[in-house]
Image (cartoon, rainbow, N blue to C red; front, side):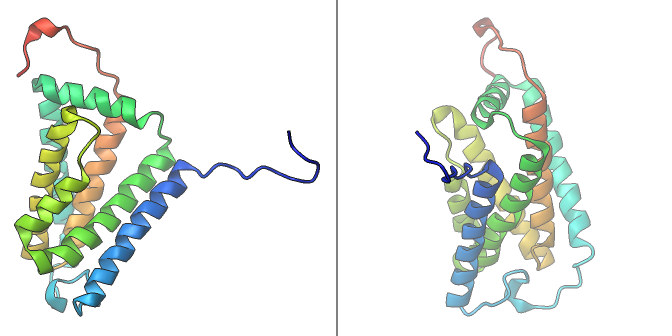
Length: 199
């Protein structure tokens, strides 16, 4: 029952929740950076980077390589097709706006925290492990996603160490998330029979 003059609050949109979540990750990264005495998480060791214009191009190339390998796995391996279908069911209907916001917010928020704040403090391997732990899915069937997040964390971290700025990791992360999420939402893979074998 609604009383006259009282309006119901509209539910919080998925895009708003995504932005708040990754804003919190970004803020956590900034706070860790400040606590370590590092006020510029974008540049490694506050050094001047000669790669600021090159980093995004390297990021796109690295991201496209990972997307290609992901598609190859989906076409060749049963576990990858199963993971694709599970993610499709988990994500539900995402609008083009949701996809863009999710890819952009996750790439900036996660890179500020895991590469910008944690990598210089913990090192490449530990920060990649923590990154992978953030990507533990609801059930054992999502373990390949966790393992791939660990490998992606190593890649993003190595790009950060090599180029000295977060340009390449952010762009690579965005490219992977945006293209893979679009593919998952757009492509409905048929359910396979169990007689094929689980390569």
